[in-house]
Amino acid sequence: MKIPAVILKSLTTLALTGIFSIIGITFATAINQPVLALTTETKNDPAITYLNHQLEQLIKTAAPNNQGLKYFILPESSDLKNIPADPLNPLTPEKVELGKLLFHEPALSINPINPKHWQQASCASCHLAVAGFRPNIAQGLGTGGLGWNKSRHRDPDVPSVDIDKQQILVPSNLNSAYQEAKLWDGRLGVAGLNAKEGLIQLTEVNRYKVHGLEAQAIDGFVVHKLGTAAIAQIPEYQKMFAQAFPDHPYVAAEVEDTVRAGKAIAAYERTLLANQAPFQKWLKGDKKAMSIQELRGAKVFFNSTCVQCHSGPNLANNQFSAVGFSDHPNNFSGLSLGRSAITRKENDDFKFKVPQLYNVADSSPHGHGASFNTVREIVEYFNQAEPQNLAAKYSNNLSPWFKPLNLTTEQVDDLTTFLETGLRDPDLIRYVPEKIPSGLCFPNNDPESRQQLNCS
Amino acid sequence: MNFRILMSKLLLIVMAIWIINIYPVYAIAINVEIPIEQQTNLSDSQIKYWQTPPEKPLTESELMKLSTRLRDISRFLSTSWPVPIAMNINSEDSILQINDFQKADSSWVPLSAGYSLLFVGQEIETLKTSAPQPLINFLVFTGTDNKSTPLLDVPLSRYCFELFQKLIKK
Image 1 (cartoon, rainbow over the protein chains, first blue to last red):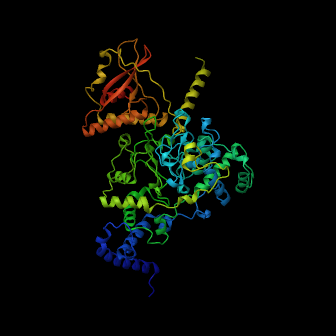
Image 2 (image 1 turned 30 degrees about the horizontal axis):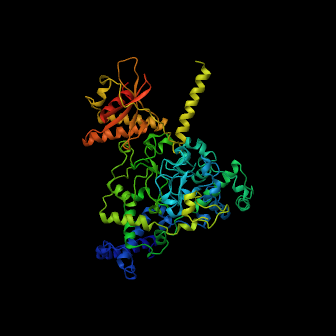
Image 3 (image 1 turned 90 degrees about the horizontal axis):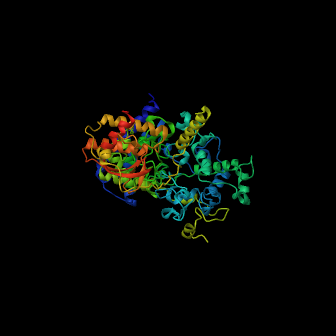
């Protein structure tokens, strides 16, 4: 009699699970010992094999439609066919290369509020590769900011209104190809959840009917007072625009040129993927890529309610959740309603976009209101589940998943380690160009940054 | 008033509200120097009741109702929408209005729907935990001489009570 393949597969899985369970009982004590680094000896330890197996099962459960581990694997940055794209902005290597330069180009900053800050900042002033494409400070400062990375501060010699600054923490551009709507309230983009929001579809920022990344990059030219007039004088850019946009093979200083420049920047941003993080290597088969503590932390993550919202290849579910974070101290109205300020829906009050989690420890502070200094503080916050924002707490709108995790101190340690190092791509600098056609100091061209970045 | 002028003013207001709501993240905080008279010329009888808790503080359900109203205001008019409170005085000549409060860093900021919502949330928390009443410093705008005067140590329950009278129980 022939046994059906499905039954045979199930029996094999059961048998293997049984074997691993026995091994698991034997080595359970060993797993709970805090071991920070893997040695050759421990890498072959059956306890680790068991831990790997457990994690695999949990990840497979978290993946929708039986997609298994591959659901969480981020594509290679050169694998443009497998990177999510906007049909109105197909990805090409030429466009990505152009976007890479424009993203770091201070020569785009030609209309600053104060002329003193002419050509001093770029997209990468707030979205630094070394900081996980975040600013590494509580308040993002474009033109009118001085200094690079953590040392960036407001120009003290100009009034506050002359500075391009944000009232909410600048989110990361990393893995943003997997974000359908951009900004914390998701106002940018017509795809995903926004496809059902009539009001959002009608807003000025979505006039081009493109996805969130494209809308943000295009609108960024208006908000951050950028323009293409200066780069239009540079032959290298003329050549690159011709290659990236063969239907309109030149760049000038028209609105449509800023739209194309925005699309090129968005194309580049879609390739910013943390695909060399230890967790990514582990997913692709290198079972020695993560330390025991990272493995244990990953197990805590996929075994808890974290994964209810932090699912998806970038560990974010494209949804909006209210988890009671405080608002930004620079918010002059004292409070942000988040998503509902855009949708006007009561059940969206205090909901903010679920952020991606890769390279989260490269920058601080954290949370849309910059209310956490460390990753561990966030883990402890979710472990306690006591809202910071009292208005949100009594709004009856908090996420149903926002409940105490009841983790032990050791589990908090493990989860923090997984988030800080297991999800950290150590080489994001590969996304930074070696030089830019304008020859300006980049990503910042203000006097303090020039000194810090050793620009001549 | 001419109907067309009225309509154009209405249109301007609607556009202003729309802009505030569409670009709240990019909006710029305007720092205004508030002239503050340290020597108050308000008579005690006019304002003294503000410095004591109400005889019958708001219940949790009343506070929740207030919170819901403030959220509606915030959602449709923005969290920066001003929520001043006119003081209950008998004189027909005087206009006394609470416009600003003092933050922990000592700066005076306008009472917005967002801050009011935070105050109401804090009062609900205070009720639930029986914590001591937080005290707030306000600035009272006196319409007669066009100046502002500090009103110190107002119990949070009093503020919420007066706000409730203004927004819910007119």
